[in-house]
Length: 90
Image (tube, rainbow, N blue to C red):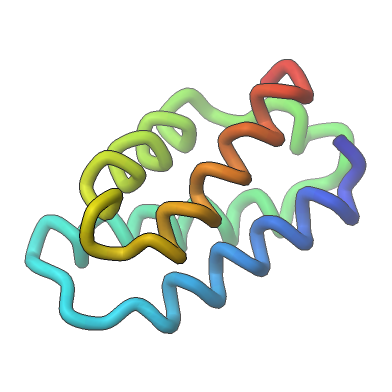
């Protein structure tokens, strides 16, 4: 996956997080962790983006599970990012 494509998905997810309202305490913690992961990935060079930390993948999967029913747009953005990372072999 090229840096531009990943950056676009990360920015899309960032916007969905900003627009997410009415979350519980666990949801708030998950969103904070995702924000930190997104910023970390956006600040990396293209070469190091292919080395996504396992904790980032775990945070994405946990958020996907937590928000699946209540926040479909956020879930779709997370799912798309996870699928793209998986397709890139990450």
